[in-house]
View 1 (cartoon, rainbow, N blue to C red):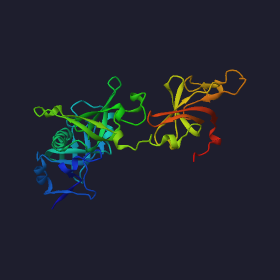
View 2 (view 1 turned 120 degrees about the vertical axis):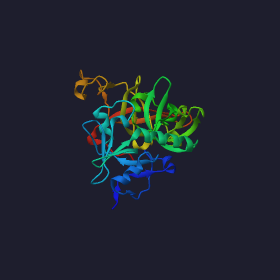
View 3 (view 1 turned 45 degrees about the horizontal axis):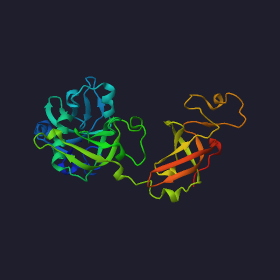
Length: 325
């Protein structure tokens, strides 16, 4: 009698792929073994398997039901080398992770390791990864001083960085605000730095922007000076005296808008539109608020300089908003 386990083997050929965590074939594959005795053959075989985390135990271990009879347990010490709180461990629930089999215990329990699996995957990447490959990485840190986004390929400890200018075509005025830890991104490997004596110094430089469509191409023709377009305010504190707004027509770009002379920045002052009207004005003030829509006139759109600037003409109440065509 055989036992089917919900564990999918991962090969080295599967590792370099444009998805987070090793890619396996679409068809569900099971590893068959002769009951619990057969499971022991999986211990220490150097293979990585993919499992889906289902729960966090009281002892802060990760749990996965491999089938109706067999429970897979990843002890806290085999999740990460550093201690993790319950709230951090719960983020793994419903995620697929790479594991190795480290032990089989009485009571139909199989012990698994994510740490060992990451090391196997890391070495496989070092052997296989080359410049020009496209992989998925997770953001581990953003350094505003060095203007670098630090990433880790597939969470296996293969660390590299992306220069801020290579993250997006849009100028990122506040990287810490725009790029959060844990963000997943497809990147292209531009340069690999290795020390053959100590492979742990393996690092790379990547680009996210190179895999994106350039929204600046043809912007002068799409938005000639004087063009009027509706856009939503996205950041009121980015540049002194100006704010950013966006529209589906901008293909991911944000237009830098000048405040009109008769405006009041309600969102920055934490006021409602009603409270912002401190005294009856001679001319109705335009209240600039985050998430509100405004009619904007394009003042400058230059592809070569990557400049996109406009000026607010009026506020468009939600009840009268018109879909841009």
